[in-house]
Image (cartoon, rainbow, N blue to C red; front, side, top):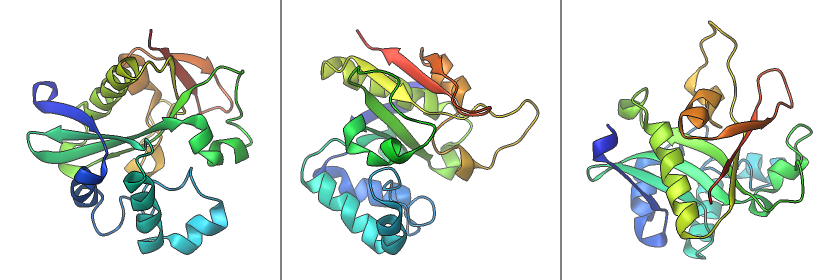
Length: 190
């Protein structure tokens, strides 16, 4: 798969591809990748169309939201990537408080189209995020993946923040372990 994949920032011009990738359900349960960006009550009220409109407004405004992965011309995957302060849900989290005062860009979500899952696309999305960060002079990327218990099988919907093994393959290192299965991982992009 890696020889066919390219990652590019989501822009207003690529909005149609984002909609195609996320489909009529907005990726998962009408989220449209707004879970970390909105207060819970607002996210719940906006499930579906409201969250789609909220994300489109952010994209049209030019703020960074993430990267799309293409396999050829087909939108195949998504990685949410933005300055930590653009994702206030992290601040509300009991377990994902900032570790220090370092400015980080947070990787909060992945979505991979069904036909492209289990082929290493998450690792490619992480590598694309690192390349984007280098280009933009972003120093630290931080992610919040799960570390499934040995032998357990996780439903795709429950690993939307990624799995720690993919982060390790992309060069990230563990810097925090807030729960038994949650990791905080960083990549110094310099």
